[in-house]
Image 1 (cartoon, rainbow, N blue to C red):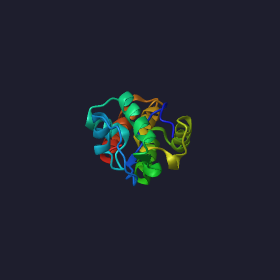
Image 2: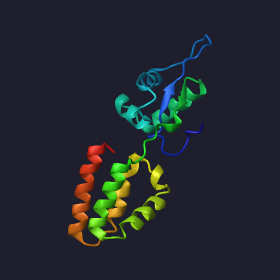
Image 3: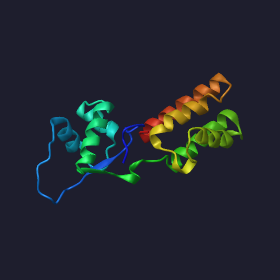
Image 4: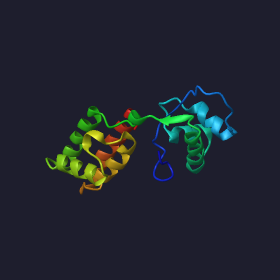
Length: 156
């Protein structure tokens, strides 16, 4: 797995229990990352908890992968749920009318995803992109305020 480039903050890893005996050169940063790793927390969350920046996390993870002490959790990236998508559609429809669905599909595609695979960590970016499509300022403000509350409720 190549973690040398791109956004690694959303990646999730879990520890591997090795059966072979031997010593592994583990420094304090590696140990603190390993201690936080549970197969559910992403690297961004682990970075915040350990106080390490993403550059350091990237170096640590490269070492841990080389030593075969961790492995990626492939299905760990959460996607937008149907409740959020319905609310988004409803709020945008109130602001721009029946073209809302087309705007959502276009925005999701512009960000490089399919609607059913849109990662929840990019929900605020999607909302911002859609808000820019609303011409009337009062409608845009209402849309943004409603969506901010929903983003907070969903913890996206």
